[in-house]
Image (tube, rainbow, N blue to C red; front, side, top):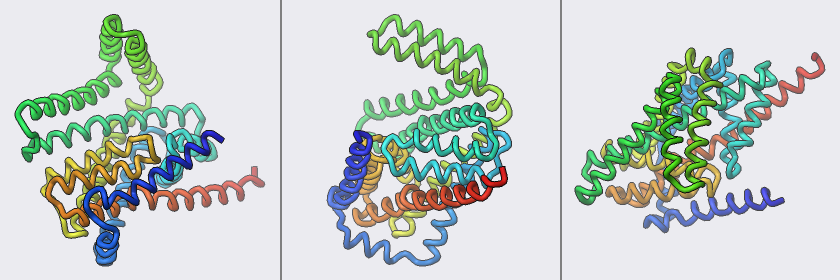
Length: 334
């Protein structure tokens, strides 16, 4: 019951934030509706193609992490898992359960699916570390830092994030580096409060465990994983720019990159499913700060959210229903 109440409250918060988002950034729903209604069929078709191409590229992340998985099966896993995650706060666990059920029905051992989930999660962490670094670099490139001190701090933060991503990748590849990182974290833990010390020691131990469990998959699949994740994020960025272009308000490339990076980071906010409401409001506010018309910015952000969040729910529902129907037909044969 408690989980049901929390889920309902989270969904209500998401709906409420979306409802007031236009007012918060200086737009209104009438102008947004007019902007969406002005989209031509060619523009809509382009957005659909970019969206589907991005989903197609993400299948490489899953096939690279689960040897033997076909791209069609990977598409189904991603669609069903995303639908569940988009509906529930902390929905990742339910999405993983759906992945285990579907992959298990195709004959994949639970241990292999667990490793796949771990590996694909690590590659998503890479993306979440690198995107803010890229966004910070874009902001610095267009001179958005208000003064030299903040600019230097932003540059340092971006370099730190990028460095963490690189160090994580090298540690997963080389055991000596992983053990060195573990030793450094344990040494640092001796000089911080108890709770922070436990966290640092746990991070080092987790790194060694993840490396041991995923080494075989990473040796053969890291190129496929990297290709899929890089291509997926690039196409997500292109889709974001295309949404801005479709409403007639494409900003400079650096501004687009910075706003896109912020949008992806804000989707990690766990107050609402997929950060819904939080990511749209924050992204629209940044675009308005960059000089975009408020109604156009809100329209573009909602359009982008439709493709990266809303439409994934019915798509995943259809995939899940199709999988259940096929599974039901096969049961009497077993």
